[in-house]
Length: 174
Image 1 (cartoon, one colour):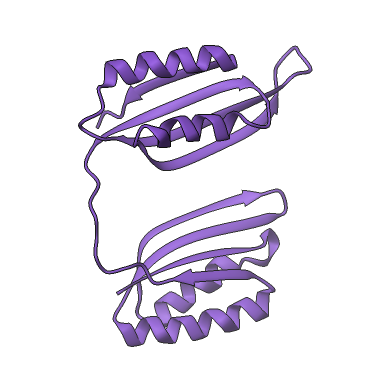
Image 2: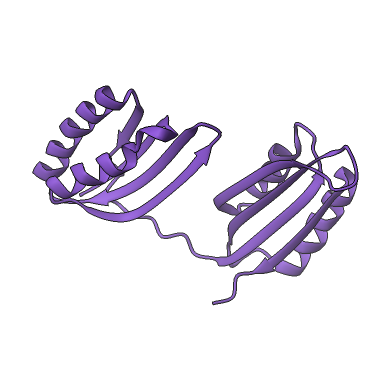
C-alpha cells in the first residue's frame, strides 16, 4: 500500500526530520522524497509504502506532527491500479519576459496534444543589466509514441514565437 504526503511549514522548524522519524517508527519505506524552500517556508512531498496497518498508524502520527509544528499536511492513498503511460521522455526549457500567462499557455499547449507533464519547475528573476523580470521554466514531459516529434517541435517553436518565448525541446538522454 502507498501513501502520498504533502507538507508545508515554517523552514526553521525542521519538521521534515520529524516526518521521517514517524516513517521510521511506523516501519514505512520512502519511495520518493522531494523538498523545497520557498521564502521562509519549507515544502515536502513524499511517496511512501508500507502495509495497511503501518500506513494507518503513520496517518495518526502525522496528525500529531501537524499540530506540534503548526503544519499543513495532506495525504492521499493512490489507487492500486497503475496505468503506465508510454512515451519518450523529453525536457522543455523556456525563458521569456515574465508575463502572467506564460506557464498556463505552455501547459495548455502540451496538454491539448496529449503530452503528459511529469514535472515543472519555474522561477522569476531580474535580467542582468536590465530591469525586466524574466521567467525561466523547466518541464519534464512524456511524449506519446503517436505524436510526431518533428511536427510537435515545429508547431511548438511557432507557438513560442507568437508569445516571444525562447525554448529548447530535447529528449532526455540517459
